[in-house]
Length: 119
Image (cartoon, rainbow, N blue to C red):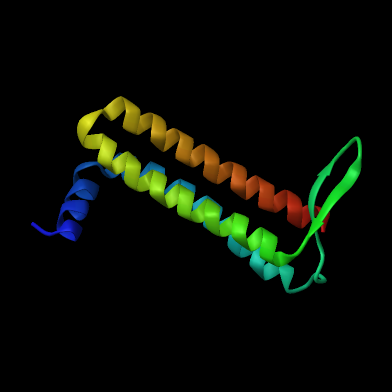
């Protein structure tokens, strides 16, 4: 059996883990695309980091955020693949990786929403 056939077989056997873990890449990609479409309306400089005590303390360009968004999407997709690989060996660990994947995707989405809100 070829590689793609084996991966599709894992997806069929572990549908619940696949569907829940797929939320991570979907959330991170949605936040990233929201930032991309929003950045056409802003100037070349974006607020990258701020806090309540100091205010704005770091500026950056769209390229800085593009690297972070691309890395987040790749990271959550690799966690999805890792959860599928672990599902055959240890179901509990696969569920933990799935939960962490959704958590990372949600944090990335919230981070991009906060950057959009400040700009």
